[in-house]
Image: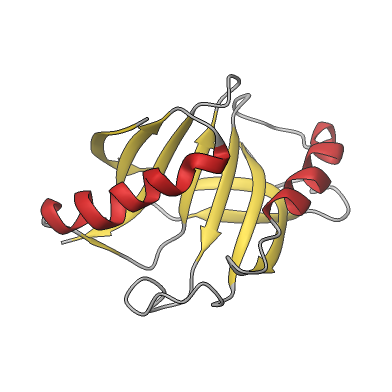
Length: 153
């Protein structure tokens, strides 16, 4: 189940995690998450128990959608400082900006329904367009997610 929650200005957020290049056809989500989860205890300065799943899409990704287009996928956590980055991990910053926030509860295998709602129903009716900033999900303890997409008017 997904529903729109709000539009908010999300602050710049420092992240430490692991990333990989992938496409929807060559989906490596479980691989990057399995690698990160084995090493997550090495990350210092965490600001919460939540996890961040980040997608960095190339320009034009949504306008000319192709499931073979490569993008960067991150598995990580928000940190107060980008110090003591563990071996095999990197630091990244989610830029401050205007984001649409959606609440999603369900299986990850059913998340495509949530994304279809966002891109085929909500965005066209919202008066906003999806911009080129990273898009991400905040994943809580009970695996409920807050899906966040960068916007501009």
